[in-house]
Every structure is written in structure tokens, then in C-alpha cells.
Image 1 (tube, rainbow, N blue to C red):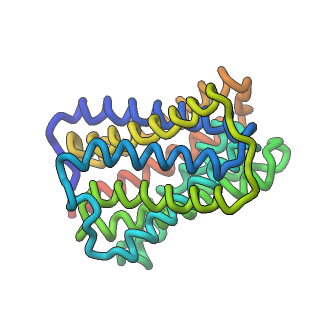
Image 2: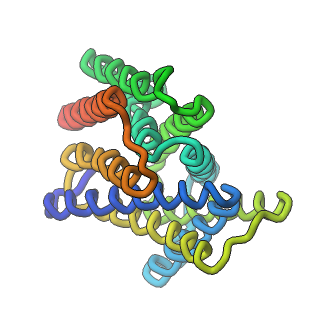
Amino acid sequence: MGGTGRPMRGVALVIAATFLFAVADTLGKHLALLYAATLILAARYAINLAIVAAVMLPRHGAALWKTDRSGLVILRGLCLASASITMLLALRVLPVAETVAIIYIAPVLVMLASGPVLGERVSVLGWVGAGLGFAGVLLVARPGSGLDPMGVGLALGNAVLATGYYLLTRALARTETTMALMFHTALVGTIVFVAVALALPPPLLPGAMDAGLMVALGALATAGHLMFTAAYREAPAATLAPVNYMHIAFATVLGALVFRQVPDALGFVGMAGIAAAGLLSAWQAARQSRV
């Protein structure tokens, strides 16, 4: 259940979190053009793990790694690790704004999957929202848009993996603590990407400046997730869900400023359709929670 303490504080935290995520996406694209994705993600998750442990271990001790359904917790971590690499590889070939917009089809996929997976009913309005979201993706990634088809496929793959991650999060929230889920997500990602980076031929290693940017990438992503978690203690999910779409707006601005990449008119229409579909999904979820 979402918090109801200080709604405006919750909104401010989500705005700050989505800004940090957009900065991390932009920074990730810059680094992905220069270095192996596995190296970047090994650094990002290692920093993530170090920060989570430093912040939470003194307060929670052994409870930080205690889980009841460890297999599903690990599977959730693998979903996010896989989503991370598809996102980074997509950013390598796609503009930041379009990449972020496409992955925001995930809330619609979560709504559709909630029926067969969690036994939740999808309303007629939900199906309308799903159609709107998929139409938005088609407009963003339409033939003639100039987007790399492989990049579009990777971004859609990210949305599918993120859907699995969100569904597992909802299922595990009944038995696992938020701190344990955060810790194991960071731990699984670190193990996966450090192992893969070590198994592959030695990559091009970054200099001091780019190594610092990799550390910053991990810190930004972690800070964003911590703010996100704190936000849901302050305000209901239905209040915060629409604010998540500030991520697309921030990504559009940063992509234009850093890479001089601006969506065309139909791309903007598609992005608006994806956001509207997500808002409909959030509204339906809020209605169901009140039933």
C-alpha cells in the first residue's frame, strides 16, 4: 500500500528521481559509445551494491540479505540485469528520448500480464489504453523514422524484461522486504556483469575521467531508486504514477542538449500516446485498489 504522509514531498522525490534517471540514461549513452556495455554495467552495479550496503547494512544487519523466496528474488535480479544491458545497447544506437519513450510501454504490458499472471481483470478502458500505447510505439518506431530496427528491438526487449521485473516485485512484496529486494538486485547485477566482463577478452579500459563517469552512473541510478522508494512512503501510487512520465520529458531535453537529437512531430505524438496509455493504466490500477 502506498504511503499517504506528505504527497507533495512524494511528487518532488519522483521528479528528482526521474531527472536522475534521465541524466543516467544520457551518461550511459555517452559511455556506451566508447566502452563495452558489460564493463559499464559491472561498474554501475558494483557502485550500486556498495552504496546500498553502506546505507542499509548499519541499520538492518543480516536482515538485509534475508529472503523467503530466494529463487524468485534471484530471478527478479536477473530480469533487471538483462533489462539493463538491453537498455544500454539500445541507447548506443537510438536517441535517448525515443529509447526512454519505448520502454514506457512496460506499465501497459504489466497491466495486460496481470490478468493471466496475477488473476486481475483488465477493463475495457485498459484495453483502450493498451491500444493507444502500442499505437504510440508504432509512431515512434515507424518505418521512415530513421531509428535503428535493432535498437528498437532491444528497447522493446527491455520493456518485456521490465514487465517481468515489475510482476515479480508485486508478487514478492507480500513476503520480502524492500531493503532485501534492493540489496539482492544490486548483488545479482554485480555478480553477473563482473563475471561476464572477466570472461570476455580484456576491454578498452577507461581513463580517470571516464572511470569517474562510470562511478557517477552507478551513484545516479542508486540515488534515483532510493528517492523512488522514499516517494512511495509519502504518497499513494495513483498520485505518483503520472509524475513518472517526467522521465520522458527530461530525456527529450537532455538528448537534445547533449546529442542534438530531437524527435520529429510524429515521434512526439507517439510519445504522448505512450504516456497517455500509462496514465490510463495507472488510473485503472487506482480504481482496482479502491474496490
